[in-house]
Image (cartoon, rainbow, N blue to C red; front, side, top):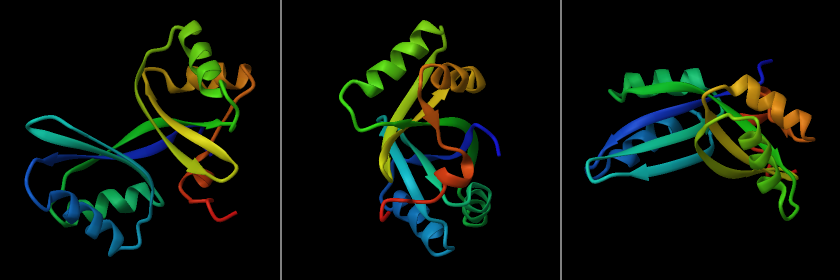
Length: 147
């Protein structure tokens, strides 16, 4: 299993009901959303999601006339301790890797941060070398909140 996971991303035109269409298409086809981030500008929104089956999610959206893309991201495991995220991000900065964006979600005993960066493999090496771990796809696509 790879060290990166796949994020499903959708450009949303700023019009009423567009987000609902995306969420309904996924939900009606048993694609579970594990984490999401929605950012907007005056013209459009960018919906980024970690889902239970990224390839199926992309196909389902395409069938519904919604263009989506898959992006490799890193899902950092963040222990619930003060300063954990700061330590991880400091290691990445010291390793001179650029992080384009990130968002967090809860997944079991640890919190998680999804990172989009220019060199995912290097980020994983840096994080593991600093005592952190990452979620592999088989774990990240499943919500473990009830454990």
